[in-house]
Image (cartoon, rainbow, N blue to C red; front, side, top):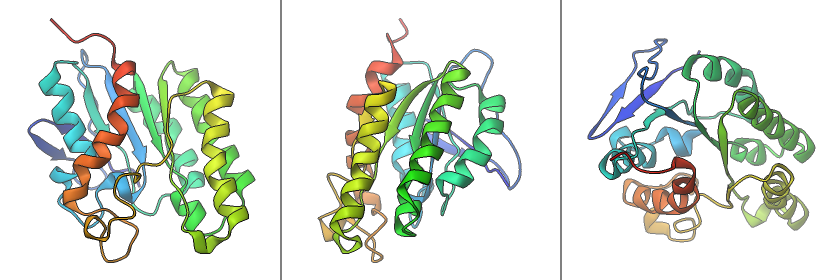
Length: 212
């Protein structure tokens, strides 16, 4: 079941279960399509980096609406299944694609994950959306071959498709215990502004000029 959250500064407007909130007719959409890290697992949704992004876009006058279509536990296979409907409903100008972490945690084949991500990129582009690819990394206990291959997967996809890339969403927080929840996977509320700081330099050029 798809769950949409339309986030608008200064508050987040959560859709009721099973409901769909579409963007306004005159506001281009930034669609965030990710997993629990973008869905705000374990924190107040209004403090998540996606809601902070919506606030920043509004404050700077870029004129976009941010829609959060992230789902906790989502794999790339699940995302690929959901994306066509999300694109048809939201018609995003920009897709922030943040998936793959749950594939890695389950040690799913990298070839399958890569293929799913590539298909999502092509689907978004076919509808005219710009794509920002957001990568994750695996802990070292998954072995050098898998962790290196997982990291390189995002780099290769970005180069192949000429996409902007955030190599690692948790770059500024992953190795700081105080900024991670007890599970060691999800960031705390205090870490969320740093996630936004990691994404923003790659996203801002896609937004175009600010509104007068």
